[in-house]
Image (cartoon, rainbow, N blue to C red; front, side, top):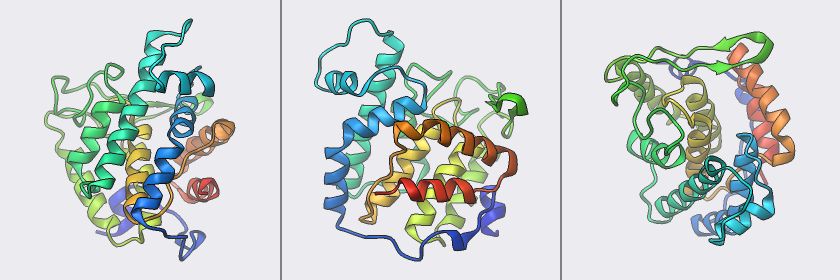
Length: 245
């Protein structure tokens, strides 16, 4: 199956660099670990979480922050736990662009936030509800329907991951993020989980992880909206490239 058909969208492959700086896996993991509070805060801002950077650091140091909703605090703690688990998987050589890793990370990211977490839509108790993505004045984007045992989602995931193996690691990583965001394999946490998978691919190949800076949250959301509407990932990939250190 052709790459674009398998993932459900297209992009200008010439817009991405032929090569990006590559270091050791240890170096990529060290940088991710050192910048973990920034990564967690940035990810929280993209979700509309009100925690400030200082509050995130305080929470990660094990000190509770007063005056914040428990749900907002739990989202930050889930992001931190997911980041730490990803780091452990990469360091131990256990990370793979696979369903077990994908669902494990979603099970941490979306814990107590999603309708169900850690399973594809239709593989848990809920068999029929199909979530959608709000696109403001442009309406809503509806992914494939939720079906019992998720036969379509599993087939698309399998085909998509297989097709992405033909890409260089940097392109594969960015494309997987958008693949997960578009196909909506889970009831919630799709973009967060898929960004963790993107960074797992990058760090596994000694490439620095990408964080979308909090200051670019509006730009990120605007470009994602256009991606959902057009199924053209070129603009988003160029944006993510600009976010790469």
